[in-house]
Length: 184
Image (cartoon, rainbow, N blue to C red):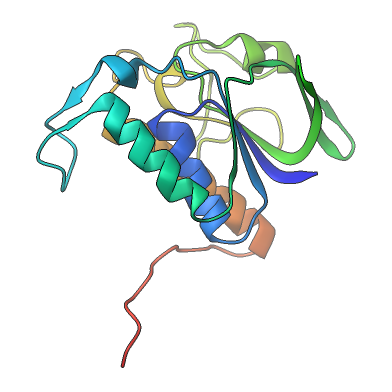
């Protein structure tokens, strides 16, 4: 059983995975590798002068893997159900259990809708400032929560917000993921 399953591996999903895996939660990312980032060229991402979208995704995946996240590239999630123990995530390859689920599937809202997450009049998944949906321990990030604000840096921030809420839930108090260099 994973602590966190993330459905989608663009900037929002990988940002969530980076925080949760780095902070010791067993994290799995299911990614069809159909992110719009493969068509992007980033000039507006803080601290990166210029990078192609595919290179950005590859570097992000490498960073997440360094913290032992389970990346399942090409494995599509077909269903998510909630039960008393958390969530069951289904793919054509099997079933997986998780305490938390994070939807990061671009504008595709079918899975959160099937789970029962509230949807806005605009057809977006309704979340609070911490990316929580109306379903306990289910989160939504990125393009599915923001009408026409599809910037990679915004999506990555959404992923960070979801991850911090998950980490806070686990700790029972607010968590701030702020690293400092080791002193010599």
